[in-house]
Image 1: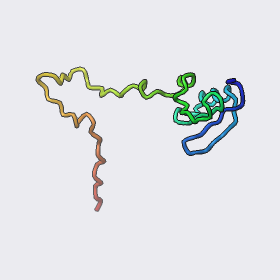
Image 2: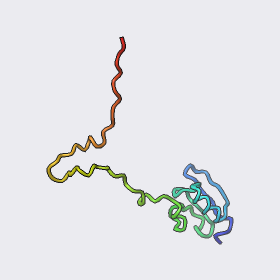
Image 3: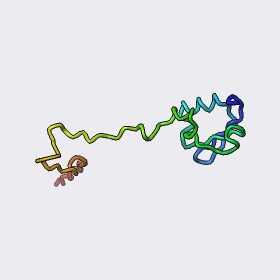
Image 4: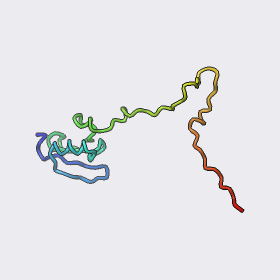
Length: 106
């Protein structure tokens, strides 16, 4: 039944495409042409309802899972110990250099 050409895709912009067979759906997910937010429909397997591709167990492996994305580290130098004596200016860790003022030429 998965191999039947009864699968339809609805992209987030509302565009609907298909019919596709299951192997095409899987290949499109691998190629990132279908993302977790896109919806899939099959008359029998989804009972004609649109289901987010990210909710289909077998496809989840092809989508970036927000929980698996590593959070960026602050890269604080090892000699800084914020817990006891030293006070850290946290704003300086995120400071952005401002451009140097232009020097007027006479």
